[in-house]
Length: 394
Image 1 (cartoon, rainbow, N blue to C red):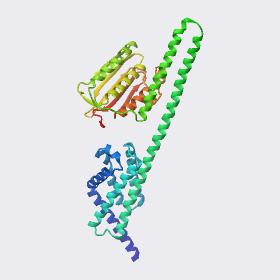
Image 2: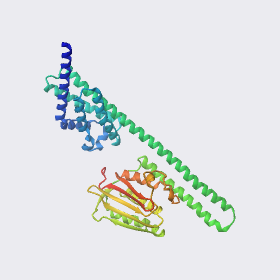
Image 3: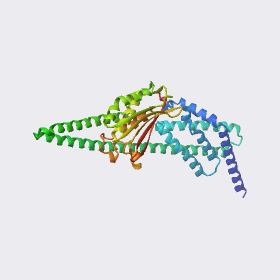
Image 4: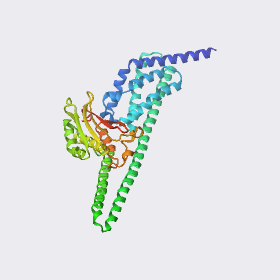
């Protein structure tokens, strides 16, 4: 009985010391974060941190420390593992999306471990009972939490990599299938037209030649789009940011498409927020986005109007919106609009291979923006691109 009582007392004391260490960490949480941040900034093996602000780099690290403290206060090992896993999965996903390499993730977690081990030493100076089994138990709990955190962070990071690779492979296959299909159709049409030229009848010759010309023009346009899509995917297209006035966009769109819209019987109108002044972004890439949006709207609208709007969103962002009175898009297809070779079924007669919006969304992402789509079948579509007023990487 005596031995059993001593064992229980020893275990209770270990738990109390561990809980006191948790309180010690909570009290020094801000200092720990600052120390870890400085260590990571100094680590030349983590160059990606140079591209991130302090808030983005820290993000949920304070919450991670809270989870660690909660885990230290419990006795069950399973609870420690569960506490580590929740934050670790988020951490792995976030670091992957921020552009970290796997070795950088491992190094930053090693830096966190180093900082916390130093805290163990500081705690030992203040806590006289931090010896023997109490010291061993607390140290093991800390390392167990950090081991689980590193394990689940890495698992999630690798999962994100594999998921991107899978989606990239699927996208590549879709592109290849689309290219084969579209080029095959054009070549068949040209081939049939060429055969008709053998028949010496003057009346259809002009029409046949026009069919050949359109087929060749379509293939050239598609090849140019494919080249641009490949350059965007391969990171060959970069942003050169400079100040520009958004009012210039309306003039550019009007010059390019007013006559085209008029010839189709469409009205092209413009609205620009006068409060928007000088913005900083890549004017050339921005004009590409605006022109592609308007071109797509004209292509898929048979009657009515196209509205081009430049508006102020908030203190940090502004937007371009293009609305049309076209056929609209059914809800089940709206998520596919920005995919390569997607075309709305009921307007399949429209010109183009379905690459325009796929290129547009990549240009928007390159400019650190995002695009949204609203559409109702029979009532038209509205696509809006929201961008930062100052390109953050400028």
